[in-house]
Length: 225
Image 1 (cartoon, rainbow, N blue to C red):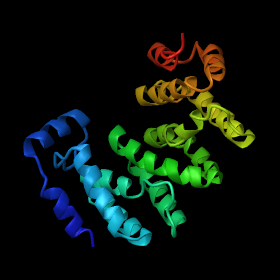
Image 2 (cartoon, helix red, strand yellow):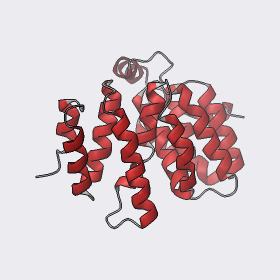
Image 3 (cartoon, rainbow, N blue to C red):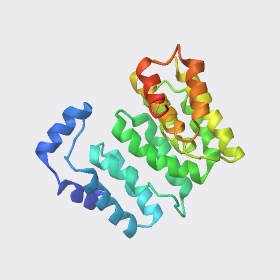
């Protein structure tokens, strides 16, 4: 079922740009050289024309091609605040992608879709917490990227504040993991939190200053005076 949609992606191939993308992302797979606006335009059209079960099936098929732009398009097909019906099917598909994460761009697009599904049903944080114990670095990292919406409330409700502290607890367990992408994810979460909850941000950094890498500590506090 995905062939007509894949053909639309291939029709926009830019070979020169594809070579540059391959060199930049440093992961061996097919790159077509599409821009993000091109992908946004295509997937917006597809979302408007397809019902949710068909979109989930198409996203699954596109992801399985392992083509860079097809995987981004798969994530974009599911990036929507409300999905009815089959919201659970979309969530489980996104979860199934985690073991395939091997680059920040693909992981981040999938996590953006996952953020919407988490906000729709915060009880799914229980499943995300299991990712923090994964042997797969990209899955551990995804636990922080997919929960970024909990950094953004200025006046969080009690349940939101509880979730915020819960996720900070995950980050606290990560501070001794000195892989660059994990430290960057900690810094990203704290930097976004600093815009809305500077006190918690400073307290976390002060408590874990000896473990956090200097670049991550600097990034976490970058927006605070």
